[in-house]
Amino acid sequence: MAYETIIVEKNDHVARITFNRPQRLNAINSALGLEVKEALEEIAGDDDIRVLVITGNPRIKEKEGRQEIKHCFSAGWDLSETTPVEPIVEILASYEKPVIAMVNGFALGGGCEIALACDFIFVSENSEIGLPEINRGLLPGWGGTQRLPRRIGVARAKWLILSGETVSGSEAKEIGLADQVVSRESLDKTVSDFSVVLAEKPPLGLKIIKEVINRGIEVDLQSGLQIEQEALGFLLQTEDFQEGISAFMEKREPQWKGR
Image 1 (cartoon, helix red, strand yellow):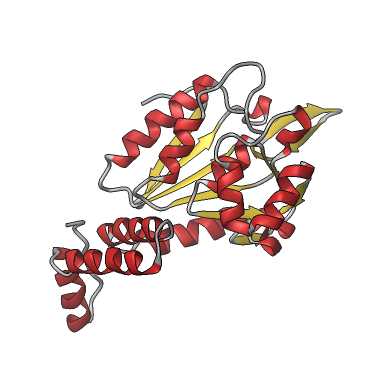
Image 2 (tube, one colour):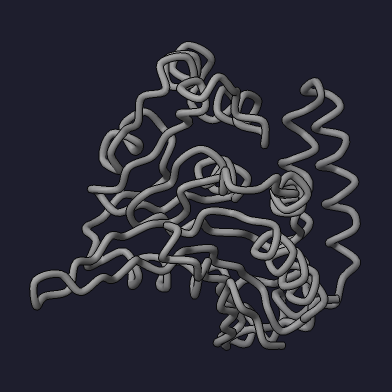
């Protein structure tokens, strides 16, 4: 399918959605929101895809005979229109396949909230990340007030949200906002290598484990342990479990079927 505001690529069980409104620093408007939603639905139904990466294209301008590059994941909500982004964020938060946010440059407001809805956040060290909605008399309304405290703790989340301050990629890693921080030059390879690690795992196992963790953190420990045991019982009956055992005994790489 052809898209106007995003680029969708698939390779070796990994899909990548790239925000492609660099002239607006990949700000989220209704067109981009709709296309991302369509792409997410299409990738969800593709059994060959096991991992999803979300990123953004840089803005490139010619200035005084040279290229000026401004890297950006997303500068957030495009204030020139009312944008239905919340469904995208919620789809990402409950997505069955592992999702990696690859942040290179700005991830502000809604851009930061999209990253927070992903399972992993990889950033370049000189990125700029934050929730500056307070400076416009707003609050982070796409899950930021709820997901940021769960990721970095209440006190630090209040500091970022109430002050509207941004942090660098290196600072994001220090406070737990990012899972991995590397140089801008190394970011793509680092994310690609990790994507391959995940994509080599059994897809059904990835799905079930992600679901168990997400459900378990919302309930008490005993309820979470019950969810875990039920999931274990289910996986013990799958073809992938039998394949995993056979591959181990036969000293070969497993061939996962996703069932």
